[in-house]
Length: 447
Ligand code: CMC
Image 1 (cartoon, rainbow, N blue to C red):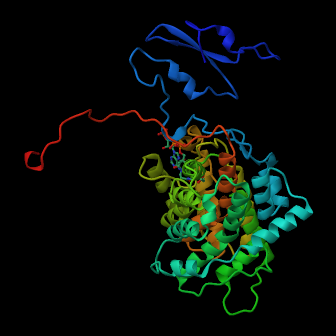
Image 2: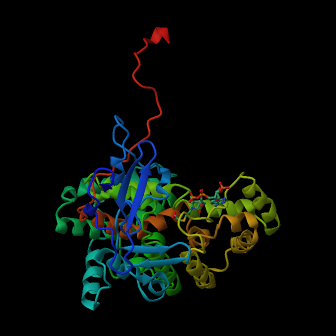
Image 3: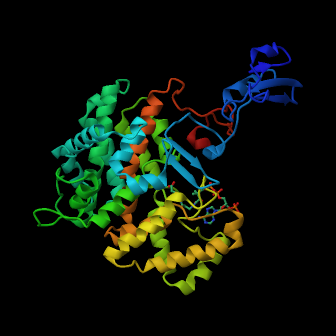
């Protein structure tokens, strides 16, 4: 930044060749009367550039205050693009609609991690590597067995992913590219196994080991639902629906859980611990936990004729319309559109979920209501996904696990990008201190 009152303004190249427009911001600090010129790059200014705006004696200079990061970019990323106004989502430049229609989850995971779609040989190698790592250490199985019968599967998943770090001490070598690649493969491979074991634990059923003849999603369904049959054959329409759901959930740029993974990962802890933190963030009802909350909400509404009363409650601030609204999308979430379509394919196999009628009517009324229109609140990815999950035989507690499994590839792509980004530092925000300053300790009997 150039302090124009004191420094030579030629320090900053302010011209843009095409437009001759100065890509700078001039700031006048009315406390001191000084003017400063700050470069604008990619539509942002560097918060650190504001440090120079200081009144005599003030430590640190000017800072920005941005609870919830509503207008702060924390990184440069080449993985996922979202245009919230237009309802556009792209992974590495490929529209989500095309990936959902033509790709598989593991192919998309490769794309997120490597930047390009794999050729045939690369895909075969990648699928082989992931398949090779699907088994868990037996001690981890015992660890999962130690949970209470009614433990929430997200709590089990969070703990067991974090526990993986104790099985792979080489994971601490985060600056070694080969070691990172191995942990990434391991984690993507083991997530379905961990999720399925958590599911079976809650049902009191024996855990089913991976079947490496099956595809990623077929194997997951087998580990969830296989009983005494020799081979579990899932309906291909359900396999396809699960692939689509996994693709839609694979990444979503700097959301709450990805930010948690990046923030924790910035301490250079192993990736199992960083992803464990991401799972914790995803668990919350404002984030991935919303799909579970949607199902509970639909059950509470119970019948279509009670919708107007429920909507009044939302407008009076008594409740939230779960599965609606998004920090970035101010339009229909493109993922919700695809899921709505996938509902039909799944219900063709499983029969229609009776809650669908309530969901569709709720959506119709909300989209016409001034409260939602004014705030640009549209259905998000979680509004319809729970209906499919329920039809597939999952209890609501499992819904967020079904989000966490595919999001692992996105978290890890973002983690890899973080570790290899020379500009990144340990995450350490500032605060505005509002508490007492120095005061003397008061002994207990004098308080
Ligand atoms: N129902 C009713 N009112 C809402 C809702 C909702 N679902 N979402 C936002 N609003 C209102 C909010 O009360 C506020 O109104 P006002 O201006 O009068 O105070 C206005 O809309 C702006 O909302 P906000 O809370 O400032 O927006 P945000 O960007 O901080 O929050 C959100 C985004 C997703 C947390 C929020 O929309 C929400 O809580 N939605 C329900 C939970 C949900 O479905 N979460 C899943 C998100 S998508 C999947 C994922 O990424 O995990």
